[in-house]
Image (tube, rainbow, N blue to C red; front, side, top):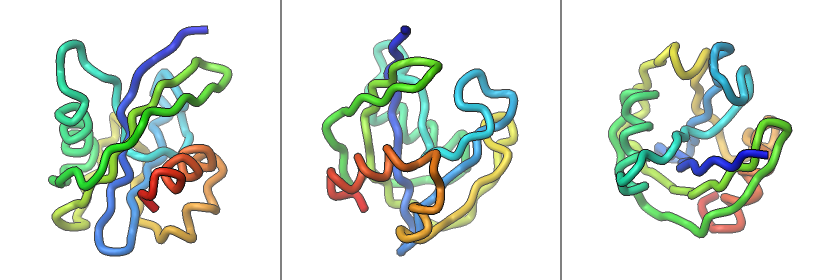
Length: 131
């Protein structure tokens, strides 16, 4: 099994959190709901990576409020070392990048429990005090 390192962010605006359904063309997790995330680039600080991913995938600017200890998730595709962040967006005006997601939406913290694909990430983010 291969292991990948990614940065993942809960993007927050007021009392809502941004989630996205991965495009069907994505190599990993096609069609699944996720928080905004991206592979760590060689010799690029993870903080730069996650802010860049948020910008590229949603057109949102934001500031990192918190980062947390990494955690590991496994699925049939790979083992994922995830470095979590909480980012406050400057506004809630998202622009869908169809290369990355088929859908983006703002949801409340209670609504996050309705997305089975997010169960482990929500648990880990709550454990770190992000939600």
